[in-house]
Image (cartoon, rainbow, N blue to C red; front, side):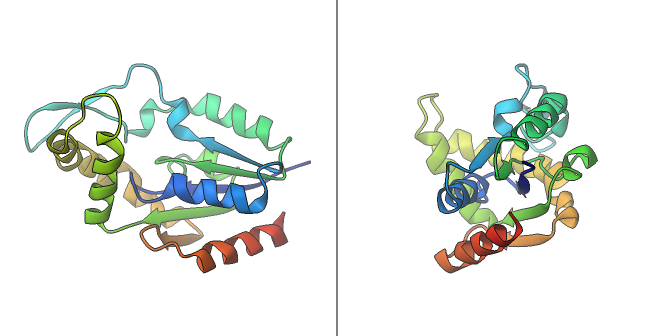
Amino acid sequence: MKSYTVGIAGPSSSGKSTLAVRLARDLGEDCCHVLCLDSYLVKSLGEMVSPISQKAYHDFSNPVYLDLEQVLREIDTQAKKSRYLIVEGLSVLYFPQLRQRLNLKLFLTADPELRLYRRILRNTNRQDGSTVRSVGEYHLHSASIQESKYILPTRVYSDLILDGGYLTDLGVALLVDFLRQQG
């Protein structure tokens, strides 16, 4: 069996993981596997120095910190096991070797204010000491700069650009129907 493989890319907090979970649920979790690229970041992330604050931040958005070889091996393995394979993450459309393995390439976007709000909710609910201030500073001084450099330009490789701030049930259902026709 060869999977129908969907890539979901986009900036942080644009709705990639949420869409991947919804697609897997609606397609049937028994025949769909989700691969999250966050799980394949190298253990020691590099840092970027913000041109705004001159402060050093972990560089989660730089694709060089993704273990690409491991990701490609996992895609090749899972593509033989599942009817559908969903690969989601910031850098899904960055690497040509990864794009070649995708049947459908989606790029999610959302208003920057909404993405910041989602990031604040997500990160301040973690038990790592993140505060609204620290999350906001990281977003403004690091994430938004690196996303503009590495993630946003990859939308040109997508087959479809979706607004992750307004994913309706009907929109997801149409996407699921399309995928069922393909798989």
